Amino acid sequence: MPAGDSTSGTSATQSSTSGLPQRPRPHSIAPGRLTVEDHLETILRGIGPLGAYDQPVVESLGLSLHEEVVSDIDLPRHDSADVDGYAVSSADLARANTSDPVELPIVGEIVAGSGKPFAISAGTCVSIMTGAPLPHGADAVVPMGDVEGDHQRVVFRRPASPGQRVRRQGEDVTAGSVVLPEGAVLGPREIGLLAAVGRSRVKARPRPRVVILSTGRELREPGEHLGHDSVYDGNSSMIAAAVRAAGAIAFRVGAVGDDPRQFQRVLSDQLVRADLVITTGGLGHSRRDVVRQVLGSLGTVQFHDVALEPGSDQGFGRVYDEQTPIITLPGDPVAAFVSFEVFVLPAIRRLMGRVPYRRPQVHAVLAQDIVSQPGHREYVRAVFEVTHRGAKVTPVEGRGAHLVGRLAQANALIVVGEDETALNLGDTVRTIVLDRSF
View 1 (cartoon, rainbow, N blue to C red):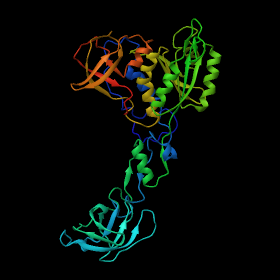
View 2: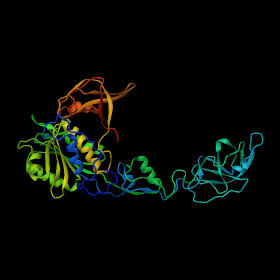
View 3: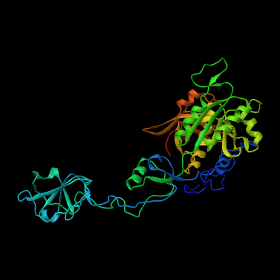
View 4: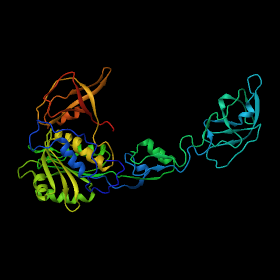
């Protein structure tokens, strides 16, 4: 979707999701399973960019402009000195040389911010600071280190050319020109430019507010006592960190048990501050799988078997009167992380009006054989590095969806296609480099 789309709120939109590659359905995917693109397109078509509003420039880092910014002023605002020195008329120094220097009296000093206009007459000069406006009658600046003299007179031993060491008015930005187009993402340099042309506020799409819940009666907060069959909740912290890294605001609720009424109450209470809800776990088919049990009964959340490894159990829909979008992820940590990367990150970027939705894939040489089962797209944890021979990628040992320690060792995901059963040492493979800005 174009970054300048004017859709407000998170209402569903049928706008283009051209960020998705159009691929034929792989032959190996069993009937009834969704492809990764099928599920992702459902999510992106069900979420529209958030409405834009005026925000302080200093708080807009990472946001997408919803206006074209035109400068009201020139930058620089006036001809000014590029160096500490002496403002002169170049005509006065036309014949200056080492054997026949020109000596000029100093008739004043100009400092930046003095607020007083100044002029010099022929045969005189003025001391000037870097950034100070050039006085009327001067057309060049001679650096202090190039002259001799005292506080009253200066000796010049070479000519000065017109415009020498002068910052020309409007040479950087001219009044009335477009300095940032609609859709531009505001980084430190763009924010510096906005402030320099006098903008204190800018119309931009806000950071999405994302609520994160984990489910499971066995989950405990980090630092709490563990029973013999309990585990710490790492998912909600991991997903909250990933949400923040994507530029959104994360509200980590933490672990919710398997009681349907408790889950429903917590979810309902959280919607007041949510543009998007993410859950992990509870997607099985038993009565303890609270996410599927509660949300499935609403009729507005659909659960699917997606041809994705790890993380085939996925869900998406809208909940309660607020019609807040919700994405449900598997409970195994690696499956939850891969699902976030594949489905949630693009959704957050769509809410922010940022394109592309998905992290770009790069090509790297495979350093170790990979064997995969057909019928799903597999994302293999790996280490990506650039050597003197080019980019290479090495799979991390262990493919289990529960191996969070191995996940932390990885900085990339190797993409193994649905119809691919083997990738060999030396093959060029598609790779997603994690944590890289795009």
